[in-house]
Structure formats: C-alpha cells, structure tokens
Length: 431
Image 1: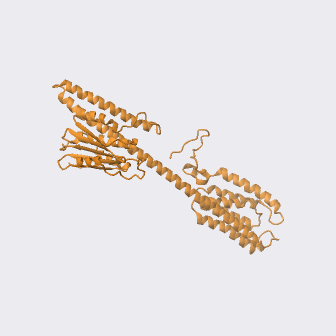
Image 2: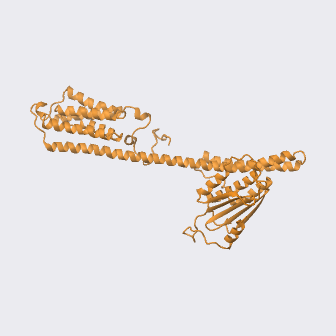
Image 3: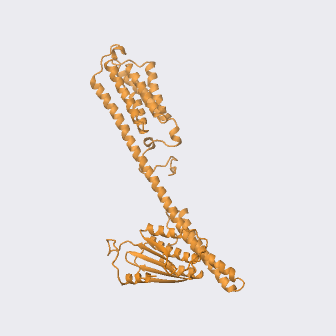
C-alpha cells in the first residue's frame, strides 16, 4: 500500500485501527534516522529526576559528582543507537547504570535508560540480549549491595535489604513483560498489515484478470466480425458494390459497439468504485449477438427452454460472454456457416449449449488462443462448469452450466428435480 498524506496536516496517513508508528517500528528512511528528539527528552528526565532524587537520599547515597553526571549522560547517549544497533544500546545503558549503582549514587530515573534500551531490543527481535542486559543490572546490584558494599562508596554504607532486591526484581520483570507485550502486538500488527497488502494484491490481480477477460471477449468477437466483413468487402468491391457497402456498414456497427464496450471497461479503471454508466450485457442481448453473427455470414438459431428466473448480473454477463466467445470461435475456426444456441433456464442454474456443424477450417482469424480458458474462468468463478470439444460428426460443441442462487422455495440450494423440459433438453443434446 502506498503511503498517503493526510489532507489536514500533511503527515503520513494511518488507516483506522492502525497502531502508532513508534510502537510498530519505523520502516524505510525513518528507521535509519537517529532518535534525537526522544533521546534528548529522556536525558532531560534522567538528569533532572536524578538531581531531585539526590536531595531526598543525601544521607543514604553518595552525592552526584561530575563522574555521576558522566555516567548518566553515557547511559542516555547510547540510546541514540537503539534503532540501528539495539543490542549495543541496551548493553551500553545497562553497563553505565550498573557502574552508577555500584558507585553508590542515588536511585532515580536512571533506570529509565535501561527500560528504553530493553524495549528497543525486545521489539526488534533481540529478546535474549535484552534479558541478559537487564539481568546484568539486577545481578550487579545484588553483588555490590550485599558483598562489595564494604569497599565501595559511600564509606558508611551497609548491606541493602533483601526486600529492596525483590522490588528491583519486580521492576526488571515489569520492563521485560511490557517489552514482550509490545513485541507480540507489533508482530500481530505486522501480520495484519501483510494480510491487508496480500488481500489488496489479490483484489488487484482479480480485477486485472476480469478486465482482461472483458477486453478479450469484446475485442475478439468484434475484430473477428470485422475481419470477415473486410474480406467480403475487398472481394466484392468491384463486382458487387452494394454488397461491399453492406459489409462496410457491418464493420462500422461492430467497431462502434466494440468501442462503446471498451470505453465502459476502461471507465472502471479511471473511476474505481463508481457505478457503470451502462448496464452490463446479458442474455437479453442475444438478438444483437445473432445480428452481428449474421453480418459475419453466420446463421444462428437460438432456442430457449424453461422460464427465465431472476438472474444475478454476474451470471447474466458470464452467460452472454460464453455464448459470444463460442460464436466467435465458430466464425474464426469453423467451415460451417450455421450455429445453434440453446439456453435452458432452471430455478437453480442456467444451461448453455452452442453447436456448429464443422468441420474446422484450420485457419485463425487473429485470436489469442485464450477464449476457452476465459470461458472456463468465468464459469469457475461462479461455481459452474464448461465442457468444450469436437462432436462425433465432426462439429464442435460448447456446453456450460452456471448455478444460480436458491430461490425462496429452494433454500437448500439443491438442484431441482428433472422435469419434462430436462428430459427434452437431454435428448436434444445427443449428437
């Protein structure tokens, strides 16, 4: 998904429900920039907070001196590397804090540097390094607070109470738990983002395939008619001008209709989501298809069986395109100048059958060879089937069956029991 800018502030657009970027991690150029602003803010909090804490611990801990300030500055400065080198950042901050505590300086917000470093390492995938660095701070405090305190400042220091160690251990566990929670949430958000992007790519691929099928069906049929009529016009231009004029008129009509349908398909690319300006073709336009085939010298007989039920636009369009492509193949490849189209309506499906007497001419009128594949894709998209192949008598047959949504009287969606019309259709389908 491309990054967009919001209309009001010019910042990066974030879809509804998308977490803030500081939680999910920066990508691209933003990931390579040093986090100056947040690090400076952390430094101010650590410096000011440690100064205040020192006033309350003046009798318990060593006063802040330049060395203590240097350690505080170092613990915060290494956080500039937490995006590029999270392991170095968390270990650097932990080492500085460990030395700070071992020197007997006051407790305070210095632990914030370790927390931020641990957070950055965990969410970037370096979990063991983060745990080891935070554990180093706790272990260092235990060793210095219970065994080495005699040789470390302040001079009158005594062993730290074990209850204090429990508090520090709880603080360490809280940091790790919070970082792990954010890591899990970040992975979930990343998975959702990947799923959305994959779904968008699938929708884009399906839309490209749909448009390719539409353009193929429209152009293949119209160009085949134009090809046949142009040959007729050229052959009869001198001997029969009137017939040549009729051929040119058919070419004009076919090209005009093709341009209109191509423009309608392309309009969906320019204004995605808008309703089409003209209704999609359906089986009610079979008479127009017959006229176009007649203009190409093909005699088409249409038979209808059954009462037409409510047909969804998608199924209606697929049925029309299947018949159109089948007739186009007759014009291109068959030596026969006749074709029979039979449309059988049932409550739960549409049956289509297109026959030509053959034989095949072995010529190609400029087709791409994707016609049968396109018909199968259309039928499969609706859960239907396509059968296409030569007949025993040398002709060719295309048979399709497209399911329809179950009506009020057939909530189960099971096929209707065969009736007289079904039996008749079965008998007439026999070559």
